[in-house]
Length: 304
Image (cartoon, rainbow, N blue to C red; front, side, top):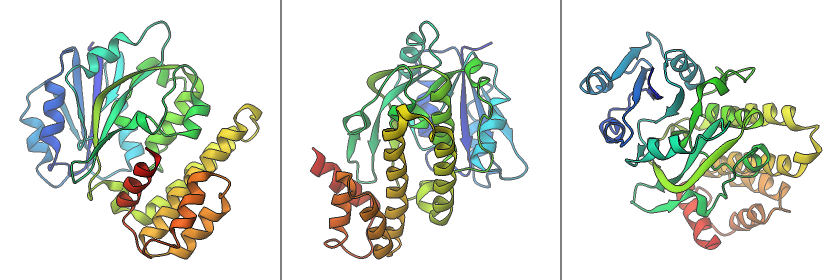
């Protein structure tokens, strides 16, 4: 039994796949297996994965599933004590697994790392500079800020069995956030400030390619989490922030499509939050159709 089962979910990921897999094979901690779940790719992903030898256990579905279902099916194939994820367009630093393993002390259920976010123009920033991390029981913290990218997390496999539902099979774009939020309600966590994960933001990210699906999934996520937390007085403020953050993503998508008036109405609804007030003002200043990556970079610059 390996210590880590590393799940690599892939759907036509040939562009960045070697970079991602190389970062696994360069790990200082060597007790792992890779569960490579090919979600019915039609590019060269299969050939690339198989070229790394038997330490990669390759599985291919005969149809394309939602990412939520593909994640769940991959979990069933794992043998390790801990489960880690690496998306095909992300990578790890060499000591990622070694450091995470050392942080699974006592009854810690999951461990995550700081992440370096890099865009197409090679501009990078540390995620924790903008989203403050937390340890222990962090559900309320995660409602306020989304600070756990999927590729940064490692989970004790036994802890996943505590969930009534593992992954939501209806979701692709928001399946990971939904899963991690619910995991944070039943477990405790640890983290490291070190940037051991690197996430790349590029025009081929799924979230940029499926704009209409994003609207629907954000609403599903919002409704699920509100139903879970609506009666918890201790999380009342955090839940309001979560709802505002979901609405911000929806508003940004409207703005990106050229629907600035719709975006403005949503920002105005949450104008008691300084970020929403700023975005509301910016809708009167910036163009009718706006690249959201550029807007994010602009806001980060203001917040420095």
